[in-house]
Image (cartoon, rainbow, N blue to C red; front, side, top):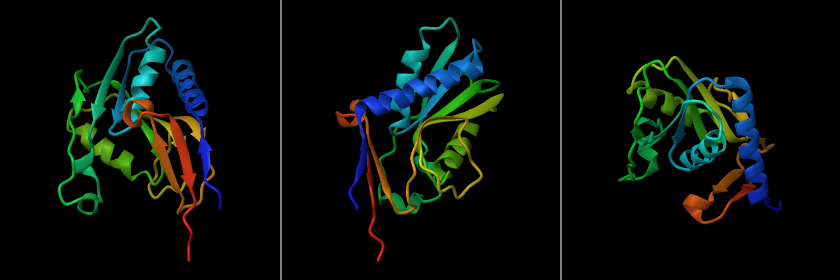
Length: 177
């Protein structure tokens, strides 16, 4: 099977769809975008840029969930921990968690656990650039930029300009014996 890909223009259109949906649903209310490392933080930064043209209170933070993952022991012997940077009070905030790809839901579960260490938000919503399906947990996004029809064993490889020096999404089919 030939790999399928999305271009930089497709990614930009997905981010613009997210910004439009967030704008429409939250109107002028204060929100905090919290990007999940890595690449969710870059999607959140791009959303922040698009939403910052409005007259509303916007906060931004980055969440590292490495120590909260349920597959932590399988990641690496010495995983690279990155900094969480949430410079606003989480208590009572309307937070929109942002990630690049929603697959099983386990990353989001870990993010919710990590976020709870910083306080109790009034509301938490989920924005994902790509929803590829195949949930293992009862987690659904509130905002979706791109919906992909994938097989469970496919690999969805996201590259973003700030992290990887190009914007591209490749879907690589995994051969099943």
